[in-house]
Amino acid sequence: MKKIIKNSINGIGNILGFDIMLLRKQKAQFCNEVRVNIGAGDWERSGWINLDYPNENYAKVQKKHPFIAYDIRNDKLPFEDSSIGAAYCSHVIEHIEDTYVKTLFEECYRALNSGGGVLRIACPDAEFLYNVSKIGKGFWEWRRPWFEARGLSFDTINPVECLTREIATPKVRGAGWMECKENYEKEFLTMSMNEFLQFMCKDIPYNSKHTNDHINYWTFDKMAEYLRQAGFKKVIRSKYGASSYYEMQNRAAFDTTHPEMSLYVEAVK
Image (cartoon, rainbow, N blue to C red; front, side, top):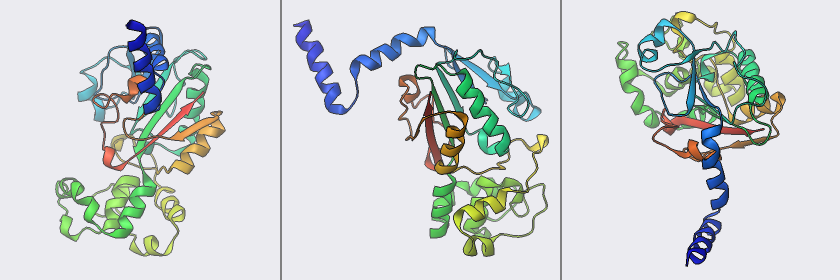
């Protein structure tokens, strides 16, 4: 009877497109693997190590959970080669410049296990946000509180300014520290997508007093190129809650930040 039940369960797994035995193997590995959340913020999960940037902007949430101080712009990952089973990085890379993201990807490749270590990245999906802004402002209603909290009438904000908030926050007219007065509608209408995204982000300096600002954009093609340059051969566009690493399928703990606008990418060593 036990054999029949086991065969039935495995058969169902094959029908649904996943390997039951592989999932069991991954579960068994959890207690022995090092797993890290890079830029963890207000997050804690048993068996995971939090890495985060010590900064006054994040001080309140960082007091809640233990973390290892880590500055992507200056530090190497504090782990030996091939010593990490999984790395998770959610809504972090849009806050730093390309050159440091490249270094981060190289460090993740170095530290991940050679036998299938997984890096999962979530960030604003610049391509989707650009295209949905071409349609109008309907998608952006959820951002009304952000603009109105800064004294800006959302009814007078155009879709390009909503897009700007997600890829180049300091350039939001009247709300950023760069004193920009344009709304960039002309560039949005005349440039290609990549030209526009590069134009918006190219001249924003990193500001340690405004670490919550988005100063960079990411599309799947751009991220995949950087990951492959770092050494990863397997790079896929993932989905919300659809990680190839079993534990990161838990939507109560992972992919909780703005899934409605996020790009999910996984790279396997």
